[in-house]
Image (cartoon, rainbow, N blue to C red; front, side):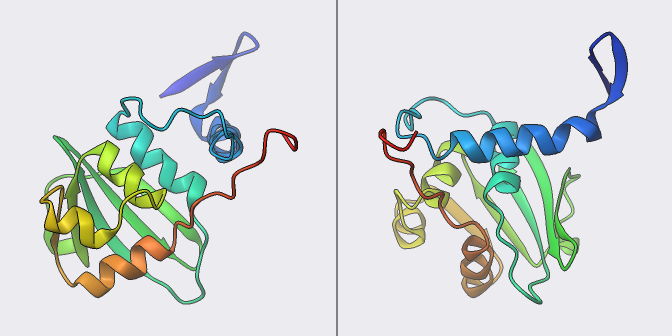
Length: 148
């Protein structure tokens, strides 16, 4: 896939860091609405914006957001995200939830205990792996209206 920028073709991989940085910046806004519908793609891409690598943490997680499946791999080189075929054998963990629930857990508006007990999120694999995975995505520090 190619995007057009300034009248010339541009590989989307060149735009990805810009989009990720914009997402990271906007996620700190106190005016960001937290209760609007979120697409599966937006939820998955938010992982890139929130990712904070941990030394030696290598995980492969299949993320199922409704009918959309993503493979998320973390390693010493960072976070790698791609659409996935249904093959949980290649994952350390499978997380099945909605984009809104994922956003609520990542933003710490809901706990893992809460979403599991309410049936809003399902895990296939060790809960400890899910906790390690979620720790890789600390919520952004909000900017006060005065700082912004």
